[in-house]
Length: 104
Picture 1 (cartoon, rainbow, N blue to C red):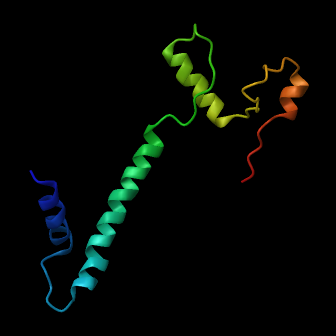
Picture 2 (picture 1 turned 90 degrees about the horizontal axis):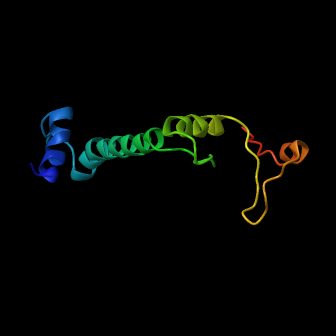
Picture 3 (picture 1 turned 90 degrees about the vertical axis):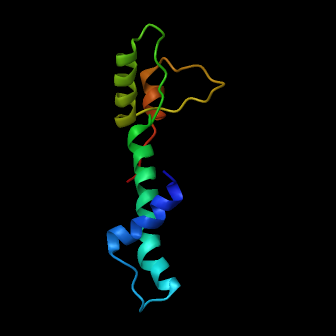
C-alpha cells in the first residue's frame, strides 16, 4: 500500500470528514501538524528507549549478558574520565577525583 495515500487518509479517519468552513492553512494546523509531531515523537522515543545508551569497556571474556549488565550499571552509576592517550589510573583516589558529576 502506498505510504502517502495512507498518511493523507489518516487525518480524515481520525478527525472526521473535510469541513468547508476552514481554509487550507487551518486544516494544515489542526490536522497534519499534530499527526506529524506525533509520528516524530514516536520515532525519537523509540530510538531513545531501544538503543544502547553507553558502551563501557569490558574484558574480552565477558559473556554478552554480562556485557549488557555492565553497560546498564555503567549507565546509572558514576564513571570517571580518562583521556585516550593516558593509561588507566590504579590509585582509587585518582579515580575518585576524576568522577564525572551530573548536575540536575
